[in-house]
Amino acid sequence: MTTAAHEQWRPTLLLTRSFITDYVRNPVNLIMLVLVPGVFVLVAAGSIADAMELLRGSPGMATQIATAGWAAGFLSGLAMYFQVRSAHAADRRMLLAGVSSARLLAARAGTGLLMAGLVTTVALIALAVRTGIDNPGRVIAGTLMFALIYLAIGALIGVAVSNPVNGAVVILLVWMIDVFVGPGGSGGDYAFTRWFPTHFVTLWMVGTPSRHGGQLGDLGISLVWVVGALVVAGAVVAAGSRTARRHRRSAGQLLTALRFGLVDLRRNPVLLVLLVLVPVLFVLLAKATTPARPLVVAVTESGSTSNQAFWFPDVHAGAMAPIGIGALAALVGMFVVVDAAGGDRRLRLAGYRTSVVLSARLGVVAAATIVITVATLAVTATVFNPKQWVAFAAVNLLVAATYAMIGVIIGPLLGKVAGVFVAFLIPFLDLGIIQSPMLRPEPEQWANLLPGYGWTKVLFDTGLTAHFDQTGPLLAALAWLSGLLLVASLVLARSRRQGLNRVAG
Image 1 (cartoon, rainbow, N blue to C red):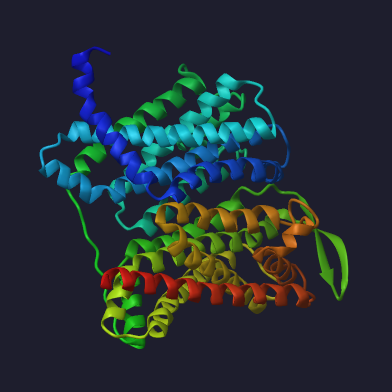
Image 2: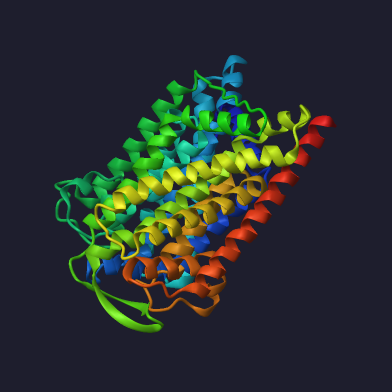
């Protein structure tokens, strides 16, 4: 690079370095970008591959290879979303100070590319450790394309959706549909999935020709998606950098604080729509993509455990419902308490007791979990008929409460960026992979210590049998819920006291 070119790019490089420094100022953010894709591929890849083969009804696609792309894509999308949203006001001030929009956009893009490169590298290393990589050129390129496409998706959602919980749920929805309904998930050759962002990337990456790529071929269309997504995202981010929004919250005494918290929740219509739309799509897509064949599940009836055959399309939606409920509840629980931290500090300064503030905040979380559970069960009722309806519904509500408390604990400890990774990963791995009786008759022995063990046992008992036989697992699950509620209250009280001390100092 010539001296003149170096001087021309130096301000952009300095901006990029400052953005990266700001991002890693909270070391948990960097740890999550490394830890989450590694854990996803190392721990979950095998079980995910088994689950996808179960859904397809036959083997035939190297799903474990695709998990590297899935992990890199999800992490890149979330990281870029928070990069765009958290920097919105700062970018506006820099523009007003005279920094060119092109230079600012280049710095943000450079930061996003570095994050995408990091999660891609970690996911590939984890894949190499777990299974090895037979075709490194194809797998490396495919994983990087996943990351770049979702980098653009995260940036687009960052401009369009200002509320972080809404943005995180939208990214989760896009990723879920793309991954689990696409060729790596259901495996069906559906015409509508050909328009999914990573349809052709997945097929090219795992070496399974689509035979509908036309003259460009699978690789050509994949590159069109990458370039097109980045160009559109860049144009939208550049246009959106001219605006900035602010949100404020208010509260009062216990009933007033709870009422205003619910009003604030209602004033976010996008979130309310998402809390209904995401579980509806999750359950209905599970039903639509389930292969028509029997599934053998170990169930307990009148104290006797046996393997029984069930028609897979009749039970799959019921098994997926609590996974969607748990993931959404964890995200909502995390964001409700994190977003309310400033308002809660003002209440404490005004003289309100900590118990009043915490009760109001947990009440709002409870209301959100009820909305999630009711929406999910309403659509589940159209495609699944549990044997013990009342008990099945009650257990799903308790599942929502359990993972909402995990979200409440994670939020103050990890913050929004790292917290959303963990809040999604815990219920997904616990309920969807580790405890799933569809993947193995009984979970590993160590899985009995996780919060999802008892709930999964009770859910399948109430859903598939006419008599309740899981008293022990129910007590274990309730013990987890009680402990999480206590820890969540302590974490919230501690974080609010620390915030009050910082304000007073």
